[in-house]
Length: 260
Image (cartoon, rainbow, N blue to C red; front, side):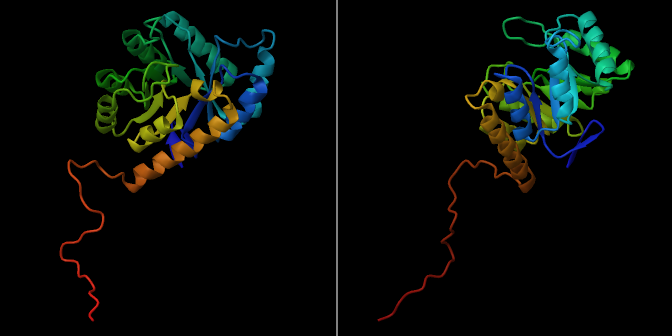
């Protein structure tokens, strides 16, 4: 059990709802993942427009926490409007803030992120800010009142895994009281295991499951990978050594010698 904002959860897997081959495959994948938090984009599916109603009903039927996000927003004005619409629609003050700064890398605009986060917190939102692995930005987000910070492992949708282990390890060490969720760039279950072994509190991903040949099977694989990573972290992962050390010591160990 762990706490995310004010919710008590069992799963450390947060999962997205985009890119699946069909709504049914999305539903099955989310259930196979064991996730209790799903993220949805209001800009991708507008409530009350065409098939949007069916999408929202499917999400509600899963009995999970909904984490609305501001994917596709480029300005503070867009983020604020989307956040307020999400709060009204889902009756939640949770909002995952994404604000694009570069179209090629989809890197967040961290200057605007800090500004809009301050405004949203003032308006009573629980902000889940999506950011880079920059320690200074993460620290400033925490100083603004963010209980959760969501650094990327690598650019969103790239599947490159944890590119900057030093930055991520440093962030974890320097922000011990902040809930840190790896968001974006996770490509395979072993990436998720590594993130949890480092002490990160959870992982949010979408593409690695939705675009898999078998989304349901991949969601299940990630579920067990996260469990393994957290169990290893809690048990105490062995630290690398600069030299070999025998696992079966011989010095001072008696040997039985058979006499004739």
